[in-house]
Image (cartoon, rainbow, N blue to C red):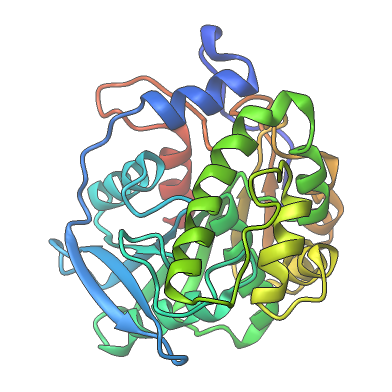
Length: 320
């Protein structure tokens, strides 16, 4: 019954609110870039993925880190996690979703919350050389849902070398999270997400004339509108609702067959009650849920000499 009833995380007094933690960690944190060795791999459908490595240990184990929506491998949360894992003796691979590594991807399609085939390509490439006896997965937000979906879809058939996973702030119920983000209190976040997504659509319009239209794009204010007009049709879903249902990890959490931790803060402004799957954790031998009172969305701020956030300390402890 791996429901973790009491979390060790305590937010700093002046960062108790979920919005404060979310904004502080996302805007003000500065972390050195340590995954500087870039490698480009081909995907089976003729596209590419950019991987950023730190292999200075030449270790026998590798941690594969997945970023969030409209993020990249150089985000502070990714590099902070990479630094903590490196200190613990891991090789680290931080990968960029299609179109997120600084160069547009080749195809009309992009990335989405359920694109587990890309995570599979990254894992398969990392393990193909035979160096690594162990691989762990770490995911943030969209990358957290993607990681959980990947593990749930594969169940007991996952590569035996992939033996642990940790995810943070994962919207495991995409429909409920999308509705939550439509609220007035979350307009600042939606605006930021949509600015990046609009730019990607217009870039694809230039490269694929006649395939897309930006009619109504500037008026969109919600994921329901954007996913219905772009994410769903570009990736083979019937509608936004069909995409959310098929790409959410919550329905497959009971199939996860390796020790896996989901940490979602109770004051995360993005996550409603449906994103705290307590029953799945109580019924599972492998899926763990930890829900600290504070932390915001990919916050979990801590202050110490190593500039290591609680989430990073927690991830290393679980993976070890």
